[in-house]
Image 1 (cartoon, helix red, strand yellow):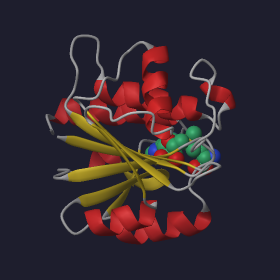
Image 2 (spheres, helix red, strand yellow; image 1 turned 135 degrees about the vertical axis):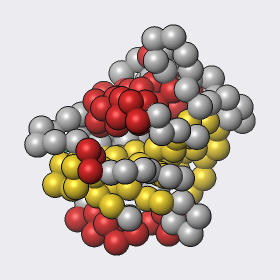
Image 3 (tube, helix red, strand yellow; image 1 turned 180 degrees about the vertical axis):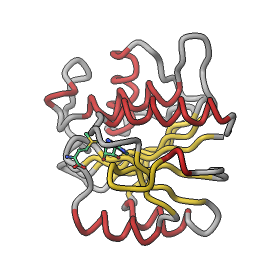
Length: 187
Ligand SMILES: C[S@@+](CC[C@H](N)C(=O)[O-])C[C@H]1O[C@@H](n2cnc3c(N)ncnc32)[C@H](O)[C@@H]1O
């Protein structure tokens, strides 16, 4: 099963959040679009796990885990509402979990059983990779990773992977990665 991670420095972690305007909520729209891209193609729902690390105010860091059985949808408002409910701990949601955990705590633990890949345009070309077993692929939002986290994640990661010279939005990078994995028939 494919496993993805997205980090956001600014995404809101509590308070009153408007699901109809996630752009104004510390760019939670980036997290919503990433989730939709992780799970949906035109004709099927993918099996995947998405880890979202939210470092905005008022309650960072939050680690949201969203799996295929969660009520995510191609309807952006529905997926936005799922995110808002999760962040505001309104109710228990099927296929989802929310906890207070930093990205470094999580990746340090995960790296004992999984291979961590960091997505960055200065990395090794994705075309050079032969196989990507048991992987967690890590992306950041529009601001990128803070320097300190980037350094730590680079040391925890097995490889930094580049999709080319262009800087893409996180969800576009995920589309390209999914295309590459599909073409190579890597699960
Ligand atoms: C909009 S970009 C971040 C731009 C940010 N200013 C920076 O310099 O990191 C969002 C994320 O998409 C991924 N990404 C974008 N372009 C990429 C590329 N050419 N190769 C690999 N990953 C890329 C990275 O994970 C990046 O953190």
